[in-house]
Image (cartoon, rainbow, N blue to C red; front, side, top):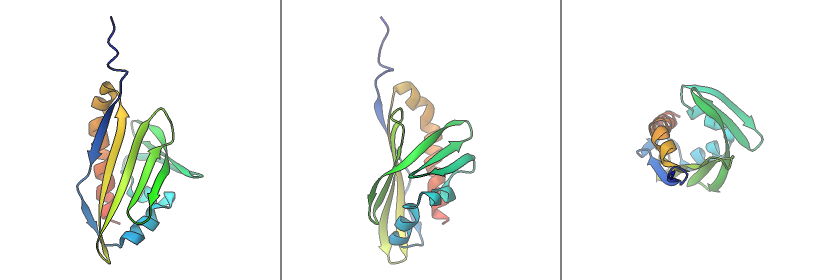
Length: 140
């Protein structure tokens, strides 16, 4: 009998190290509640970044395009992006924590549900992706 374990999904959680940015958390929050500003932190292997109403379409070399929306905004503390398609179940969260008036700690969290085979294939590319986003975020 065929095993159905590959049809079940399991949670995948990835996080970047906490970084410090020389901007207030209000500045960062305001910057990233505008979808167009996410392009500034996208990886160098970006092939496409298009704003489409209340979402953006991201295409990376070798990976299918993904439509992302802002799912949740918690003023000055958190912005949650989510895949617009129900076929992909994941969130990318930006967390902001004030160090002082002009310095903010930021961290990216990725949470998704994938079957074990997909998890195994995407874990390293996703880890590299969020780490590059974090590195680019630190340069803003």
